[in-house]
Amino acid sequence: MNAPEADQVGSRVARLVQGGQLDQAYALLAPILAARTPFRLLDRIGAAVGAGPLETANAFLERIASGRTEGGWVVIASALGQQLDRDLERALERCRACVVGADIWYATDILGERVPGPALVQNLEPTMALLAPWREHANRWVRRTVGVAVHFWTKRSLEDRAQALLAFLEPMFEERDLDAIKGVGWGLKTLGRHYPEMVTEWLAQQSAQRRHPRALMLRKALTYLSPEQRLRAMEGG
Image (cartoon, rainbow, N blue to C red; front, side):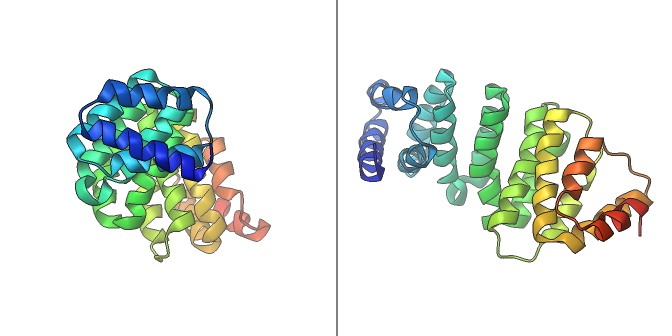
């Protein structure tokens, strides 16, 4: 399958979904999901579905989620990404429900980079407010998603708001679950690559406050810092 073919499939699936023919739409999509189709093509199909009316599109996304396929999470995530400008709060809620239901790291990362990540880029302050409860959510994958979203923001945003994202991640710096740490640490690692001096100062503040992160969290945050910056970060000044 190539990009034009994926667009054709996306249009056909979307038309079936909009017509309420969810079983037929899934029958068309299922072989594509089973064939391990490249994510970039699945993204195109998902975007076509997500551009349609919310009620029927979301009913179809629930049908895809029940199949629990890796490619299915890509289609779902791309579809929800298309809803951010129309239905930000509920698109994030549906994303969170999928993260919990999937219960696996790759679905968490797929969803995080396509839904809350772009939401932060498009609408930082409202999205941070909506994601704030995720930082303390009982589910470790939901907490991991926050770090994945910050990682995406750091790669894509043209705004100089990294300080706000560091402050947003601060309550998660002492996260104990390793799966969640990998996501939060990923966000800090990418911030450190693009804003090394800012991350150095932030880490020094955490050290001065006697914060105690897991070793993996600290190692990821220090990844792209120079030896001199690492020393300052560790010594608290």
